[in-house]
Image (tube, rainbow, N blue to C red; front, side, top):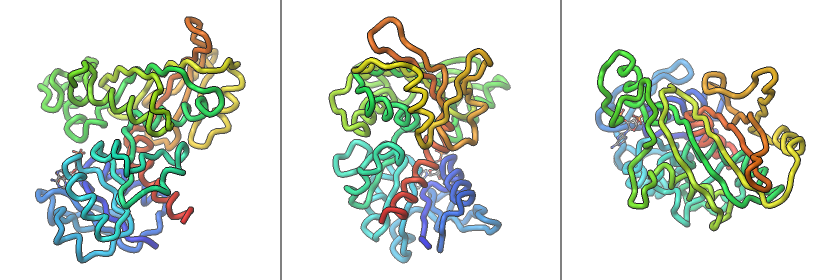
Length: 329
Ligand code: A2P
């Protein structure tokens, strides 16, 4: 049995951690919930009991024995508190972008690069939601055919922008102005996720590019990305265009995808079968459909990849990392 802390327990992903730990019957001895000072003294339910939420501060950490600390409280909180939790012996699994590109910190999707977990020094990073779901099919392709170039175009749900992201969509449907997004998200698409950088890309786009290279151990892989926020409550959809090194036939790729743990092929255009955000909500797997050749280049392939961004794209992936560590001690 393990002692678990959740930092950012009152947030969107924090609550999903609780749901997933409960539904997977994670072996928990003690559960400690942390959030900001605002939430100190409130309670959250877990397995029919109410658990106290405490302010995240060293005084509240040092008297507890914690095996795993699951973080989703923003980059600043992670930068400050992940090393503190680790110094008291916890393995931190962090959902923010704060530690992802640090050379000392493994960035892991358990179906894709679990071997990197061996290198951890107390902090492990969960990749960006839009990166996680892309990695599951792309790992199959890079291992079997090699990848020359990737073009990502994403259609990302508002839940990825936290509680206020969801509220902006709900408010927007009633004609109320947004607070989180710079323009209305209801009835709109915003090619703008996270901040703009000097190179013209958004930080979200650069996260997809850099994290893909790190997870696939391919530092020179050619990748470009356009990430778009769409008026969908939950689950991200992605068009992924890939140029493979070797020639392929589609049937072989479908068979390989069908054999891959964590990936569900849902692809039959004659029967109008392709994954959608609404269908994939609440599912653990990454779903892939519209698997077809890109005739405009040699060895080109198009995929439509959909996953629950709060589940596989965040909380579930982090819990799977903890489970992997427990099962492969
Ligand atoms: P709180 O509810 O007390 O503000 P979301 O991204 O869904 O909005 O969730 C953010 C999570 O991060 C919440 O649990 C929030 O707690 C927590 N959080 C925000 N700021 C801090 C902070 N300075 N220290 C600890 N937790 C924080």
